[in-house]
Length: 334
Image (cartoon, rainbow, N blue to C red; front, side):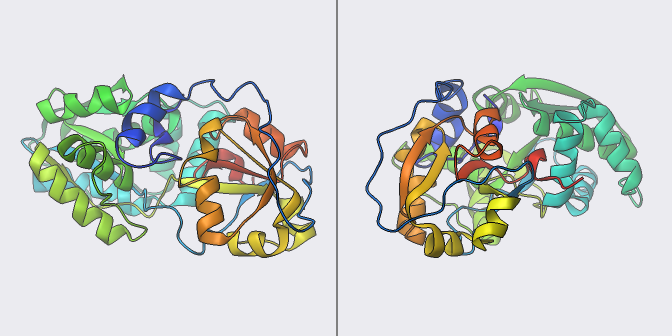
């Protein structure tokens, strides 16, 4: 289970940081289908195809899970933050998709993928070199976090630091290490980290503080971070959040590019939604599509969370639309 599941389908907060990180795993790997639900209209039957596209979340169902550097406040200084911010300013979602593709599909190591990206995008240009010191960058137990950790290593090395990247595991492991200063830097995700800190401080039923607006989310994140001894840099344009994917062939056949168009044209019995078992109950998944967009599907297929079962279901024409992550390498066009 990738630790980047974050707010994926969680209610809020601790689900993003705990239950889904450790509890999903292969729970949706049975491939069994939930009972069909009533849906008026014909709907849109699945269309097989290899190329996947993410439908635009035009009504902002998902919160702003932009990549953002998290730093132990005792280690934070302008030199270090400026170097990390250089990574943020160099990274958007299409570039993150290509980085994930390089590792997950082209089988490059995170270190090699990061170094190639840094060279191609002049990542270290303009980074001032100072007195530095020893820095440990923590990374989660999934490829994207490890890639980001390597990008932070490259930028911080250029700033004069002696940097080690250490893979630690999920947020429940690396967040305490970051707060204690056992590691100094971690690549994080704005909305998910905001809710993780929120529920840690205020309880599992705390009112959510993240938002589809990144500025609102970062303001709330920094407020919670101050309480935990954490400092945050500039968020990247790159996001890794829920995305509802269809095949390019499906989008072309039915003329859909947004979730609003999907709801308007494809609500009905032939439409099959695929995702992890929790999708049927979580507000950022099936209930969110119903409430925010008015989408009605004929059947829900219980698969996995942004993993190979969901992507295979899309490509082989078993499901019409599936939940995967917005920075998944499957969205790469080359």
